[in-house]
Length: 610
Image (tube, rainbow, N blue to C red; front, side):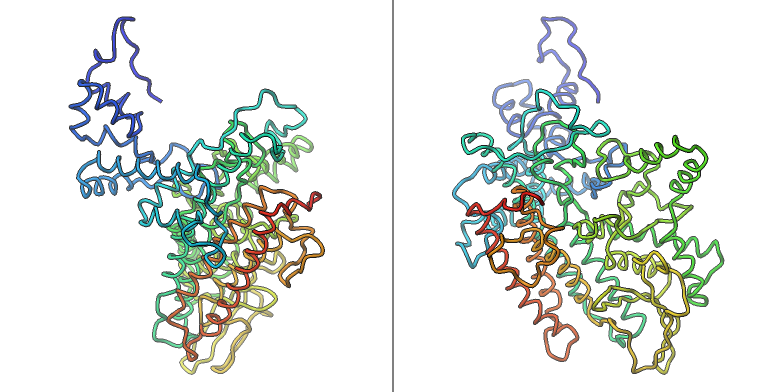
């Protein structure tokens, strides 16, 4: 970072500095309220402020206008796009100048701070059926920040706010460190420590504001993605299935914005400690749906390039094209191949190197991302690998039910996911490469397929693919190839993209329910399965965070209903889903109300061994 020139002598005052220096090194580091105070107290600065030059006000808008020099952490899914400065210049012109734009931004930041500090409001998971619609944070935030511009500023202010921050610890026990990082231990403030409890309340309120406002745009994005009317062709035609795949991947990109892999009590502390698995608060729900789609475009273009290099025409030789895609999708990345070779050649030293390699590329590593960490595919500066594969695969260990595996954004950055997200990624790449993929929303397991032949008489040849299965996964096996006449369909073929999106949301809402079980003796609902393995009921902070996420996901379910509203008549394929989702929304609303009341009554934490 550039530094301001040092004064020539102790007697030199700021008024002796050239005007361009004051603008570059002083104005650019002041917030709008400070600039206003300078205007009222300093005649030397007044003329420069009134000049309304962009350089005076740009930094006060708190946005990065140029991409950072190095790629961000792989879980920070939305690097600031360069064209934002152009958009701001256009907006400043509409409002009458840069000064007016900065003043509007300052007002939003002030209102956000007031909302974080405010008392006498219900929390974000409270639904309108249970409280006054004018007294909960969810409604107040949306009313205050009704337009997209204000919402974006309020979200940025809540992420960067220092309200709720803790002071750095005096000392750290070496026993609590791992590879130089501190193992975070969450301890609830004592009832007597009112200051600590207030800071915790502010951290939670910041997260509530972020989640509630992000859910507004996610809900609209999902509705828009599913609201596109189907082409006037047969539902079994390649054109129709391409419409289904495109709608699903766009809606899934917006769902990704509702999933955050961080931990509010750890990552919103702002105490400067490098925690194991710690994330920056600025990454909270920071998924750009356009970046998700752009990443699929990038991978699809690379798949198409590989087809050209291999001399494969996907229309003439779809099986051979699927083999190329299978290698690209499932094979090890180049760095992993070299690592395995070094491990075998160097014995114990190679094993240590492999351990360090995987740690630096895991979600527990919060340091500088290694130069060869090409896994962060959502970063537009990270190209699709030209050699090796993507190694998109199933989660390892007990991570299957982690929410991030239901996020298409996380799958593209971390390279593992559950069957439905892997299938969405596979079909998205296949569609861009010229293949004709389709989803199979089967009851027990989510699969996908590629149409090999589509005859005029309605008969088809379909190759089923399972990207989740490491044994035959993306291999082109004859036993998974089916000849169908015009009357036959594979199990799970869907005419409605909302079916796939609803299933993705069900996975997430079911995880929320399983993470916050009520104590024994309370009535259990049929959604609670494997609670012992998935519960966070012993951690008050994660219970709160899960309740907030559950509320946002219910909003997303409303978005699906709005999107398929044009299919709500009995003769349309989405009618059954429309009715079912209405029941599910009411069910989850009641579940959330029950758990939020238990949370406020002090029932949690009760599962201390979770």
